[in-house]
Length: 377
Length: 137
Image (cartoon, rainbow over all chains, first blue to last red; front, side):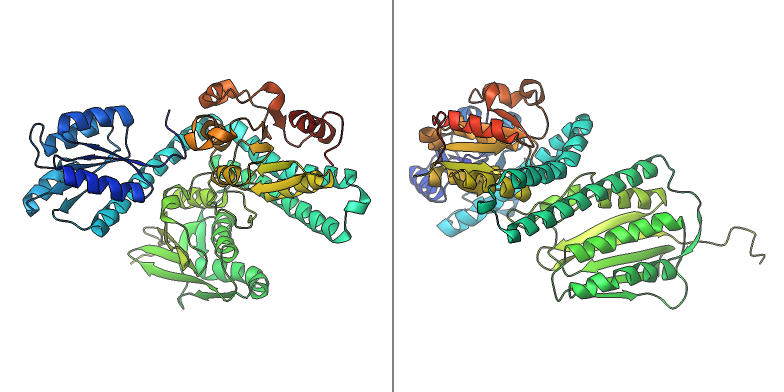
């Protein structure tokens, strides 16, 4: 079994002794585990034995060719990232190696900095692959253990509240202070709110899934829905020093939908944009028409979403975790519900984000059209 | 010197409550909010006992920690530290987490369910630390 927090391993296969020695030294200094081999056959044995994260292989070696090493390494494990060293830096050789599955190439001679750069980039790529695979596995497991997971989600805030109250009850009054008591009561209230939101979202989701939320599909003017929602958040936004504004067209922006669902949808997006923002920031809701669709973008200037999390953003119960950051109350269901609503209406939702600069959620949905024949001419 | 307890849990509120409880009992409490940070603190502070949540960012993160402590070369000198695994779900570890079967650091009496039953928890902690009936202080 692989060691979850062990240093990454890099195998270097090169017939040149000096090259093996210097690559080995540089990699070890980078905090990696380096193993070096002088030819393809031994290299492949080494790869089978140690299941490395990365392989650096010289293309031109006696015995098994570098090209063949690439495909044999990927037979052992297709997720091992491979970089080739090429002595004759022609584009053709590099392209051929990449076609065989190499991630990148290093033309000889190269500097230690060039090696470090390419190794870091390749390992980062590998980490992303592994991470998304891990999330994929978790997602499958999550579906299988759904009931367990939901009960964990519901229990977590309850456990915190229970533990606070129980400790408060037993703590020696001399060791307690009114300020701490007050702080704990506030935290209990926050966690109770979290629990209530979770239950409310859970019910909304059950309704969306049962189709029960879409009571009627009528002509809805987003030019009315959006300003109405913004009005309810104006005060919160001001308190958090966030500028909340709408940029909507002068004429109505009409879609086919259920007003209740559209409220839930934009409410979720605007709440998130405010919640994951910073003081002095802004939230801008823009509505336009484009190619027969209504396009609504909710843009914030908040903390942003790291790229590795974006593919899972709309999954149920998925929450972006930032280590050490203060826990933000949230259920992990809001975006999942939003996506379900948008799909039900025949639309799509996308996200663009930059860490530290903000995120933009863009919703596209079909414009309302006068039913055929109703208009006469 | 008071016994050092390392509390590894991603819920800040749970940590705050347990920390106050243990501090009032004379323990020194160190906190970590992830498995990775927890392992770092094991090496840095050499705690006397570890309280370890199972479900953190990943659903089996706690087991990643016990696994590293058991097999990782760099943790060899910390292998003896007693670990209490805590979770809000009553686990059947062998069935739920294949990895757990390998982790023989875990013994039944060292599984605790959240919320902690405070008198039982304090007694087990003293026992694990070899403090007997006497209080930590």
